[in-house]
Image 1 (cartoon, rainbow, N blue to C red):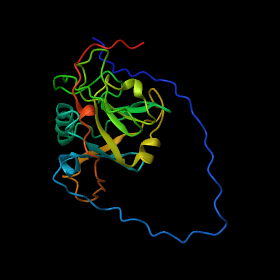
Image 2: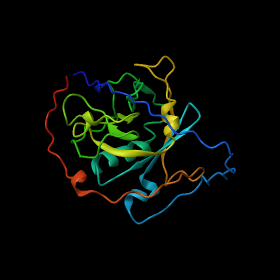
Image 3: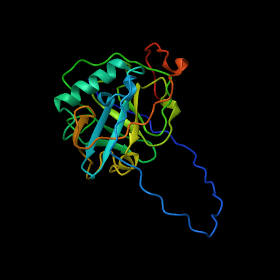
Length: 228
């Protein structure tokens, strides 16, 4: 069976806005904010063990907050594979400008995954905003395994269809620099994936998470979705 994980590239209208001109007087220089801080809080969303760090071949790092309340089974899978070193050396094999960057296939073709069983869908009402991290799958709902994608721009048509499990909290500019293509001619690679709790050499800021919205966290029934 072809297990190619497909996503639908949706068109999006762009609007241009102008900003008011600034006064000629120069603003005083602003001291750079400290960058190497970890905020540890009782809530699991703030725990460094729920921060996924991706060090990429383009020289940057992406930090992703994993939110157990959204999709506990999927997050447990991501953590397990990360600790096994599964994502180390894996490329972003499908990167669509204005849409998303997909990775997690050791074959680099979009047809592969881990040796672990496929996951039961954990669809939720958390919207697919810029920086959303969500699991890729086939046309069948319970086929997510190891592949995931980072959203460049909002794609609300993906809501309730793909399991949203986290959000980029640092390094979105690094995600924006991932090489485009299906597949890219020179794909960007994950040199190392690690959890914040395991990576002491270069910690990352973890900003406070908003209070959970119950209506967004209500599980949805897993039902087949026909994508045109």
